[in-house]
Image (cartoon, rainbow, N blue to C red; front, side, top):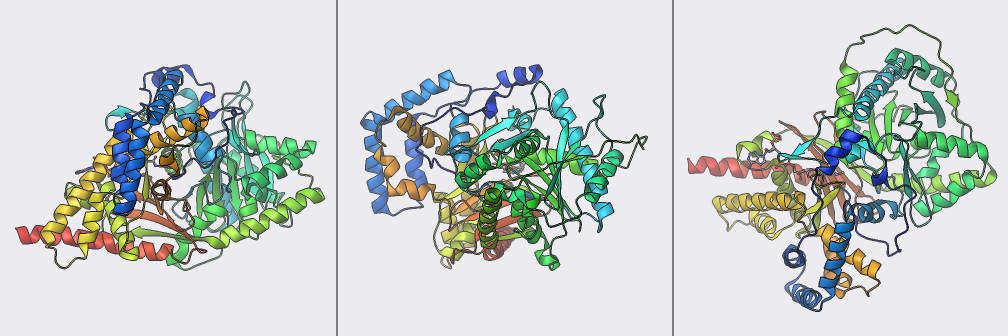
Length: 625
Ligand code: COA
């Protein structure tokens, strides 16, 4: 989902353990090998589309200047040379893009993972209101994740499809037993799921204290939720004190600062062992203190903030290890969800797991296991030296600034869901994206570069490309919508044209023919070949095209939940949505430090845009009858 561009010019260094090289089981490998390789689109095609994509974003004068640069890039031989380099790379690798993307979008990105990279998921509020309920639910949830893990381990997860094509399943093998590790210049990801002795424990955090909880019996069977509940009670009972140093706060810092603090932290043998235990664990469960009460209207937004950053150093932010790929969060007041570190996977595999787990938690208790006494879960110790304490204090300060800066609004649009656009023979995703364009245009009287993530999982090790939702067609529609000189019929025609253009871009993107990753590849190839950076990438228009004021993503789920993430530019919005049949769950984020943006305001304009478009379509239909 994240609209990152190549920010780093650093020369590539090999990953400690590349995510894509984790040893995978046989049957899965056969499926993977049957998938096509990501193509390198033809150069001319990308350059033409790039110029087209710029049209709604820049002036005619700027466009003419950029056209000349593009023409020069194409005819001077530089473009061809870089293109050949990319094609060579494509012949030599499983996926010419995946490692580059992992590095530039995630591992070399130096901003904190909190808010800037890691998405959160807001799950429906659970009906418990006390500790017993919290621990019962957490136990069932853990059992549900282990049930999903069994499907991954047995390779019985059904292969997913998109438009009739099989999808790459690699990301499922990256989300458990993995963790990001900070590094100077570049982080790495470790994955223990295929280690000779895979981990059998999870980490549980309560009151900032971490515990290693073994979730398998000695015969390899997973603990039942009854057993897990008993273990969680023990953890709860031994972590009642709240005066502990919130060691997890360190993971919220800027990556360079955290890398420095990390090396300092693990100098101590006990600290190193504890950190390693967290990194190796299958996943983490955060047993949070209740979040401050707010009105029903604000509740979901409050939970979204809780998932994204934990509420600050005085609340639950210390109850996390943000480098951990998967952290489920269960608070005493019934609010729950998760936060995940983005490097190993996109939203959809995480949501598939969530859907499974949420259904699992609804199952009635089947077996009451014999209560064989289980060992006390091991508390992970940390030696807090004055230096570590100082690093924690600095991380707290930075985190609290980020917490205050995040403006997030989660809401349910309940007038209609996917059903309405479908009944009008329009793609629901395109409909929502066009409405977003209208909302933004009404607020700012201009169009902005807009990113929507498109899955590249039809290809081996595929991640994402960009659907550029701001097009000439969407601009024509949004300009016409409030124009009194235009007839409704004309507006509807422009709407349909904009929606069709969006759907066509989507099809182009998911079949590997979009422009963003190709342009990134050409740029990185230039860095790798050590040729001087072609002017086309130094051009202001390129910077405008890559400045995504709207960074958006559809993450559909069966569960009535929503994913949320932060904006990718200081003056932008992050918008995520889950279109259900008769309503749509939205999350909108912005930064308070930017005077021009306001999440609730965009949410309001978005609701209005959706309703106005519906009315336009319905009214025009009626008048035609
Ligand atoms: N008339 C009637 N129905 C239509 C239609 C039309 N013209 N066009 C589409 N539909 C239907 C589809 O058949 C589908 O039906 P279903 O609900 O029964 O499955 C439904 O409407 C949704 O289709 P659409 O809205 O077009 O979107 P999509 O499901 O094809 O998704 C993307 C589009 C871009 C979201 C998807 O291709 C994708 O890439 N997803 C991954 C994004 C991602 O990775 N995000 C996470 C980043 S962290």
